[in-house]
Image 1 (cartoon, rainbow, N blue to C red):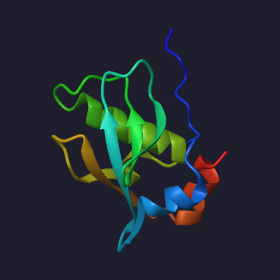
Image 2 (image 1 turned 135 degrees about the horizontal axis):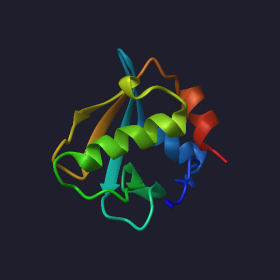
Image 3 (image 1 turned 90 degrees about the vertical axis):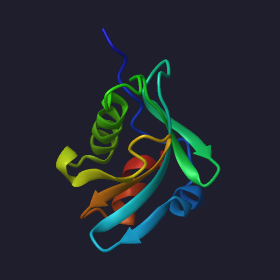
Image 4 (image 1 turned 30 degrees about the vertical axis):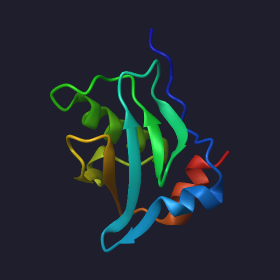
Length: 111
């Protein structure tokens, strides 16, 4: 049995606003990924990015697929509305949240 990933972030609202940028198609989220973590969860800030600990290994795109699935699930949107803009082979990624507003993200992630 696998543990249910934490859907809420421990990041404060003002900090979360720093990692979100308006994009013509929605919002851009600056992410730092830590693969092979003990569990998938939001893990605070890492510099100017929100850190996501992923249980998945960074092999054959598994971590990228797990990241998209985790973000989509956390925000209550379909996976097709979450896509990588940059950083497919890096820990530092830019993720597009299509048709998502800042208010919706804050409502879902702030405890």
